[in-house]
Length: 138
Picture (cartoon, rainbow, N blue to C red):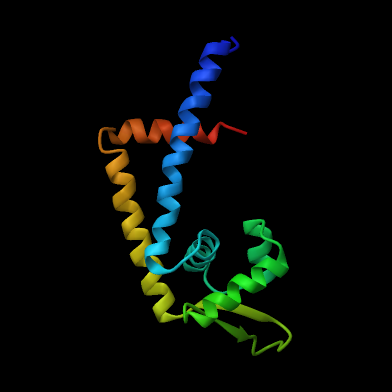
């Protein structure tokens, strides 16, 4: 059964409302002096450990040249560092510093609190249903 036009319009309006609200979610990093891209890179490093820029570029869909600029800013802020491989000096990986790890964990805690405030009326089962439904979107 195909959804009706009115259902699609209503869904569109709800997505617009949610996306508008999510902008606030991602600007929370500004409290810590982080742009959205800096936040995503630091979160990726926290989850995956030290990585080559090419890997981060592929996973984040950020061009290598733009990514270099972002990592330079994060290095300047003391959140990440570049490390050369001991086996192959041509390989450079970036990793979180202690300051970077502490900062991204603090940002994530703030974001978890934000998400809890938005979904406090939902049961755990409803949240899992929502996750399952969202994953069906191609």
